[in-house]
Image 1 (cartoon, one colour):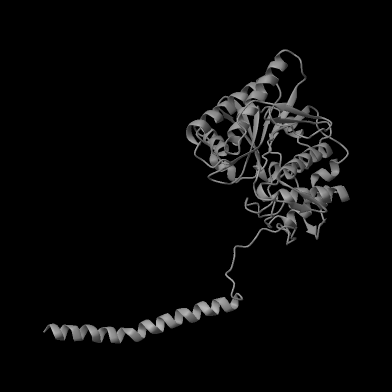
Image 2 (image 1 turned 45 degrees about the vertical axis):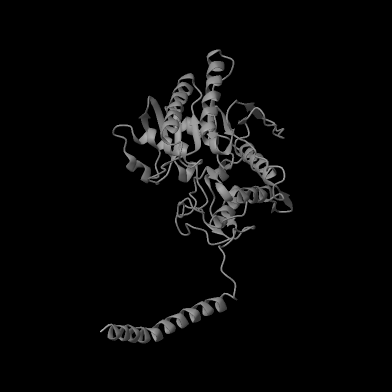
Length: 387
């Protein structure tokens, strides 16, 4: 009986053996075929481009979007009409937090990136982005000051007219920079409020931004067209992150500064208590969204429409401006796939788009045409750049 069971087991094994051999052969042939198609080399992840790659311009045929033929604009953005005529009535200053990070001694050779005929290491790249940020402001809003908040230990090699470097004590490490940015904004507003109450300074409105933006229109109109807000934020149709912290405007009256500071203090508190474990680049935006959307009866559906609106949030009158005009990002991953609105005022070169920021300034320097430069941005926006 035992011998019979053994025989049955061996018979089954002999019957299955050809099937096993056939499957193994098929897998080997498939692998060989894949290697032949790829030249025997394993496929690697696509690398980011180290030069501009022009593609089709999104938004073709839409009447309220920029239309391009190559890098030439077929219609003009609103700013083209105002190039030599600033509409700002009140004084406006731009404020940004900036820090540089040197590579540790003994690390790998410097990571150089070439734009045009110039090569930059990481620190030089940061500085050239900062300088181009200033350049665009001085073209579009030549009467505006730029204030750079930085670590007191930093020595920024920057000497520009109408640019002030203001050291503020704090922790400017990469992991804490977004948290420190809010703290620096609050400290800056406190000093301005003191000077304003002592009548040492005139009323100046403040626009707090990232340093990787290009201002391509006169933003002073925000304060004249919307005379009753204390604080302005930019919104987008994004459920998880509807507010972008890269653009915050504060009215320069004593009441506006006080309410703007109190609002940011609440954001800081929420950030510190709820979102410290978030990505180093997301905590402040999550805190902003929490402060706004947790208000009773706040209608989040308004974020899906491209229309400015105003609401009362934590004692401040907050103006919400659409990112599509005031914080437009080339569409590498930001979702702006319907072209560039003709009323775009701010282009935000997030992440690897900073190379495009340099290329854009080079283009504008050569042509002095904002609309043509925006065509370059629009047609290059889907490429990921090695920067």
